[in-house]
Length: 321
Image (cartoon, rainbow, N blue to C red):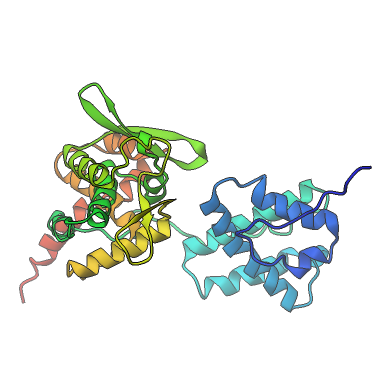
């Protein structure tokens, strides 16, 4: 006897939108496949959920069924969103909505994509908005961490890995112990990038010192297949076998910055931008920074460059009144 396929939502998904479930099993299955089979990266999946679910709820509030969504409705939602969110966020949300509706068209759930003809707000950026620390502030933060216990050593090693390798926080927290390995006379980092790709970069001597001291104190050198950066058990200083998440890293970074008395806004990406800026300030090239950061385009790398900020400040100070 054949068994019917049971369609269930992924653990990280919110309740299925009624506008989807009312269309029947095919629409429900196709909707779930979009977030599971089609999107493998959990961070991308979460971002798309945050963009799509509010849009479908907005349609539901107006009594619009899935088949009744028209371009004018999508345009109205985008216009409302434009008044509340930054242009780049609106464009990201529209892209996610467009991709879902395309997926439903291919699955023969709806006849056409009503978002295909809708344009998002104009947005051009030449300089990123990621907050950057100065070299002095970064050194103050690192030196201010209490390294008399394993948690302090872990936090310093994690921040150091991001600063000295221009790595994304997700790439660092997803590392296993084996991803910090010797090659020749130097140690290397194997970073877990988007799309299941790996990016290997030599370890800066300072980051190498931080990692060595942390791994020794944690006693995890032989646990090659276990997470490198691990959570703690409650408020104790005992490490668990579980890997830190990017949210764990964010909370840690905010706490460490506050403890160091740093008034500048700090986020996980701050250390990627800080490392690139300091590298370029000391004579590095955009091409090499791009290679270290594993960016597809030098234009992306350039968004992290804040070397011109000091020049602009010096010029402003020429205004003597």
